[in-house]
Length: 502
Image (tube, rainbow, N blue to C red; front, side, top):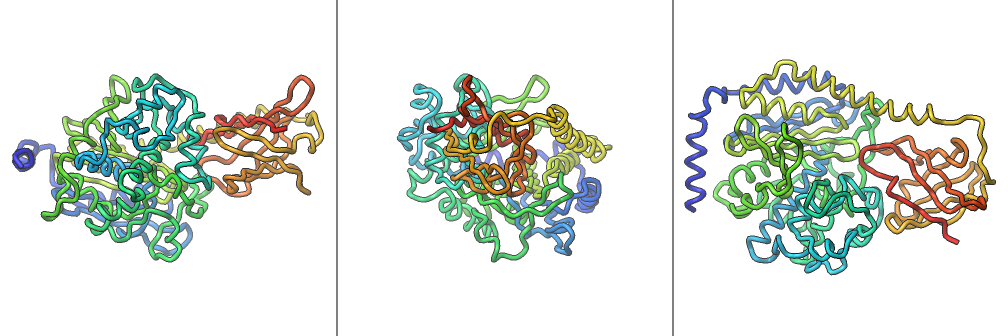
């Protein structure tokens, strides 16, 4: 009680101390900025939510839920929040820790005996806290190919993590890991007997009145006011929602700005909303503590538990972003000033980060001139880099070549201990690439050059399009394996080393 009382006095005094920097902000200013961003980025739509001192400043939608249709976005429109889910997972485990049901410094194997990484010592000594602050020794996004559009269970996915390579010394680096949060979700199940989403709904979503928030895409077909994901680089092509249930603890929540503002209010107010304790105040001392340094000498950032922590103009900034197939999101809080911002989009651009940063800068009295021009310039640069990567592969193609072998010689069963079975089959239109555990990734193969074939995906994918696979041959011209090259920044097919099965 004493700690909360002191913090409350500090919050009351702070606006007086920082009055010059905290000019009163008109919601109209942010509304105008959002409308300008909608036009400049040429995206279908998005929603913006702002809370200050427990009061909602803005909760509005801009644009449309589906490109080409009159479907206005509003504060209740549902979007995938993706990795902003991680805060729910970390808050859960921190709460269970305060209740004595989980030890954050306890070994993961105490809860999941089958857990294993690249090294036996690390496997035996990795703690629950390590899972939540990205210091397990795995590279950023390493292993995402295991779960992406895969039909395995969380436990089956976790059992394959052992085959991923070490990227840095244990607890001596940073590597953003979705797989570690999938593991954290199973720790919740082992301790409580509930799945992570059951626990989150019972303890957070229902008590906060987050009635529209979903933990799976399965129910969206029967719901109204749901945004459609879009592939931005393909002229805002609409996409279907992808089922992330197996990886849900890393990014499965689907919510609205109206609901997310309720979550941010609970976070900012130390777990109390209208006199109701949603989670103990001690949770903040656990989740908002820096554990793992990131960045460089000019950018002091750290990973907390399910959050990223930094400072700006002397103020603590608590934030996270999210990336889902066709949707990006951003959350940012200035806790001591009672400010929370959430931007949910149905496109894959930097709009959510740019607009969130603008709002935070405006509240802190920082210069905002040229914010949109600079943000759009960065977006154009990123899009050009994507196109250049594709062009470089096309330039490297050697025309006029032929495969070393007949199609039947390439057909067969292949296996990778990380990814599982892969098949190459003959079909009337040529060779086909088949993923038994991830059939949404199936594709038709067409000759590219030498023993390399282009991957023509059956379905459209948000994170990648162009790709090739090379058939590896031994000295006797026998096919021994597959080598993938699918340029993208998230789903690393090059980690798959499939070997031909006899």
